[in-house]
Length: 266
Image 1 (cartoon, helix red, strand yellow):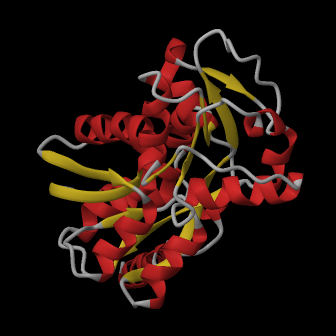
Image 2 (cartoon, one colour):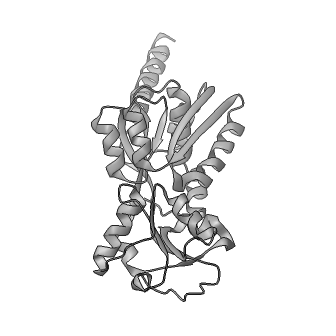
C-alpha cells in the first residue's frame, strides 16, 4: 500500500508539471487536459479586451463560457487593438488580451504586462465591403482608386489599416480614403449607413454584416493576412477564469465558432 501511494503521488506530481506549460506558443498544445485543468474551480468575473473584429465570435463564446461555468461572468471591451494595448500598458484592469496582430500584442509583452507567451489562435484576411448589390461594380483593389468613389480605410495604426496598407503596396496602388477609422467596425459602419461606397475590412466583418454589405475578394489580401494572438495578462485579477476562457477559445469548440465566422485556422 505504501508503494502504491508513492507511485500515485509521483504520477500526480508528473501530471502537475506537464500541465504547467500551457503558455506555449504551439497552438496544438491546447487539448482536453488543458481545458479540464483550467476549468477546475472556475468562478467570478473575467475581463477580456479583444480586437473589434472578434466581437461576434467572442460574445458567443462568452455566453457559452458562462453556461459551462454557472456563476461566472465574462465582461468584454472591444476596440482597436492599438488602443486596447495602450490601455493595458497604462494600467487598465483586465485578465485577457486578444489582439488582431502580433505587433500590437508586442506592445503588451514588451511592457512586461503579459503572463507567459501569447499564442496565435486564428488568422484573418481582408475583403472589400461594398454597398448591397455592389452598384459601383467594384471587382478589384484597383477599382477603389477610381474617381468619385468614397472609400474608407482603418487607421494605419490599427491592424486592419496596416494590413490594407500592405495590400495596397503589394498592388502598387495609392489610395486616399474619405476617412480613416479607429477600428474595423467603424469602417464597416460607414458602408452600412451608405456614408461610403466601400471599405477595406476583414472577411469576418463582411460575414457578420450579412446582407447589409457585399464582399469582394482581391488577390493582394493574401499578402496581408493577420495573425491573432491571445494572452493571459500579468495582473489578471481572476487568472483561473482567464485561463479557462483562453482554453475555450483554443479548443475544438472555440475553433468551430471562429472558423464559422470566417476566421482562418492558425
